[in-house]
Image 1 (cartoon, rainbow, N blue to C red):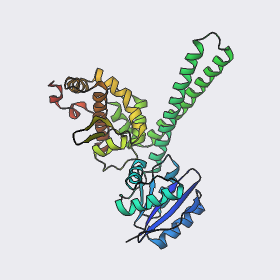
Image 2: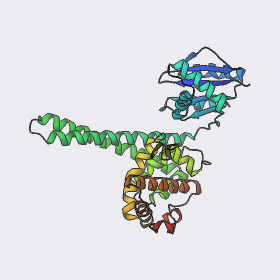
Image 3: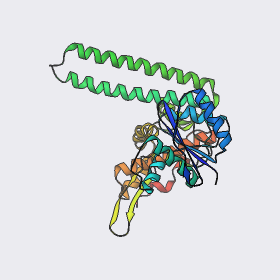
Image 4: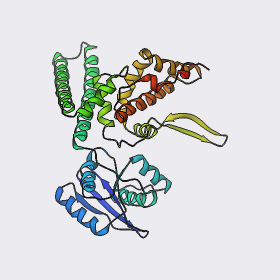
Length: 331
């Protein structure tokens, strides 16, 4: 059996465990530094593993994964939920960096995940810009809520109101600066600029939302199917049924990309009002007994499928192709 390597990544270090012939090596810790990357890759060339497995946690894994991939190493980047479920399957309760690395090494040997290919640097840059804009917008919303609460009482000193107002103004300047940087990047990349325009053709999706969606979708492998993209976004349905006694309501998994779900929510609220096809689909689901939330999530999946089709086929969003006329039939 070929060796499998598990890599548990944290902010400043990463721990490595090798699983070979049913045995685990002792954990070895490395720094996030080009010199350590070079030594680690040299060791891997001697070992020649079949899989090098790490989780897609935050952004800390990306530099290491890119370095390994560029060195020709068989690196696999998995959803953290996958390793969590694998640990539950093994009835594993303890959690340390070394234990997590060992779990990932065994996961690679047992599950043989597909190898990962790094996105182009320009697409990585667009994703980073999109995510930072998303975070700043969230911070601005929180600040506005605080300002509203401050103004609701006369006991708030004026200096606090002025301070919060200045913070909001600063956030708005930062958001605008990053949006301009993202637009400049799109202007340098005709393919991504066309994708952005295609997304804007959808009812409810403006330039800011199109940027947020494109920033997340442009780094995905182009051969991914629509169902895989839905799972990536955490919009796939999870059933809870067993025998005759367990029959909970189906829910979305939320085990994927929260940025995509956040970017889709408001456009779908608009689409069910202004896009005739989306509205007919939504109303047909309500007529069949679905809740409003379930119907909204179904439209979110449809819209995500349509946006992904735009990106893959280099064509504008067209809801006539996405929704069937039969969706308008209420049963």
